[in-house]
Image 1 (tube, rainbow, N blue to C red):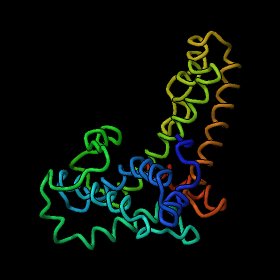
Image 2: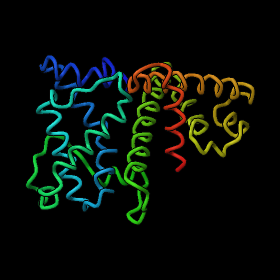
Image 3: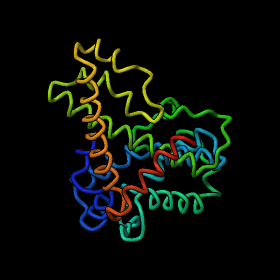
Image 4: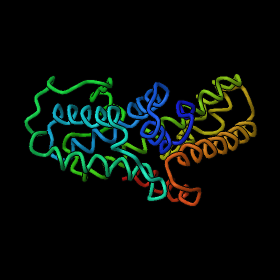
Length: 237
């Protein structure tokens, strides 16, 4: 959820690099546990076997957690997504020789990572030949939308509208919902007009949370709409 981050993704790493402490370390750990999916898939698609990719993903984030000062970002130079991808590319380039000889179980384990969960969540097929960066972008989009949906659901449940959210959430998905307003109205025991009003409000709240979530990963408000377009493009590819 967005509340897991007291500040932006940029400042989490900056705080950990500039003033290491328990709070900064915990925030950085949450960040790493959130964004390991796109990193893992990027490594996988760079010709590493699944187990090797998992070891390398662990190693990459171990280094970030141990020495955040070596991963000090400059928010003025781009988006957090680009920064993370650049760090992973640099890591793989430096590890190319020894990485390919890693054996499962020989790496360090700081985070609880499950590649099966990643495959299920992202619907990845082994035979898929899209380039690594496109895998990274799709995984990034899925993770970000998961966070938005979780935040939105939490808000609706807290206000006693959890049933309405469950019935309507399909309208927020890129592919849309196959259920008609009449069907949803019947399930909720309200009029079709009420369903249309609830749908409008849900989409408005979704957009607000989405922009806030993306705003934490870009260097300025001017980039938010462009990042949203790229997010949905990645989901369609």
